[in-house]
Amino acid sequence: MPVPGDLDRAATLLCEGQLVAFGTETVYGLGADATNGRAVAEIYRVKGRPSFNPLIVHVPDVASALKLVNIPPELEPLTQLWPGPLTLVAPMRTNTTISDLVTAGLPTLAVRVPENEAARRLLTTCGRPIAAPSANTSGRISPSSAHHVEEDLGGNIAAILDTGPCAVGLESTIVGIGNGEPILLRPGGVPLDCLQDVLSKKIQDRKGEAITAPGQLQSHYAPNAALTKDVDAPRGNDVHIGFGNDGASISLSPTGDLVEAAANLFTVLRQADAIAKSTGARISVAPVPMTGLGVAINDRLTRAAAPRE
Ligand code: TXA
Ligand code: MG
Image (spheres, helix red, strand yellow):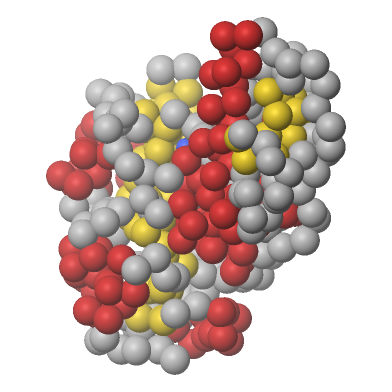
């Protein structure tokens, strides 16, 4: 299954919306075209992830990164560390075609320019931003060789581009902005000292909870309107989001396809929220089965339905 050097084929598969694992200097990533919602949904399905954490988007150079995000001045010096094992979380530009599933509906995007030569060549050849979490099933150890990926995901993905063992072997350091200051969201391949040297200042550490589970934080997109899930028959003027063949005008997937539903989830929530805002209505969502990607979809809907502070 690993295809050493078969970079053009790997790039073609990615452009076709297929999943391709590839090596970076940190760990092997499970790559998908970040502009293709269905391809991104496949990442979650194949990893068996029980919730939609926002994903890191990989680009071949700093110029490509700047087309996707507005790097705030507080983080700007850190772009000197690219290419390298550093991810920056910054406000996403409004003109990108990044799937909502990549950001989990957040207004910010996590971007990284990997250092690994083959990875950068793949990204250049592909010509599209590539979303890639570590290429392992949820809960397993991150892979640092093509062989690790094959053992774990081999039968489930289109290809593995063998770029050799990972030089760093640990995920990238993630830095974002909190209270107008650079903030460490995840320790990783670039040590804290190095970040502080480049910025000539101390960086706050978002202790414990945020580092182990940044994707679980309240920062996720939640609609403004009250939302109720598992509603078969909408009441009154509820803005109803359907699933399957229920004739709803807004639907996660009219055919009841969970991959399509995942790809549409955040876009459809925004649509419903916009309508609810103009009419003061509530949002109701049809039941989504708890199988496959349905687990992650229900997790997100449960959070969206949770009482707000
Ligand atoms: O080294 C790495 O970064 C590897 C290789 C493949 O590049 N990738 C990786 O991706 O670790 P992933 O998707 O497993 O890590 C994403 C992390 C999650 O913890 C997520 O919560 C955080 O980045 N993240 C992504 N977007 C974010 C955002 N907009 N705000 C805050 N955290 C974000
Ligand atoms: Mg991981």
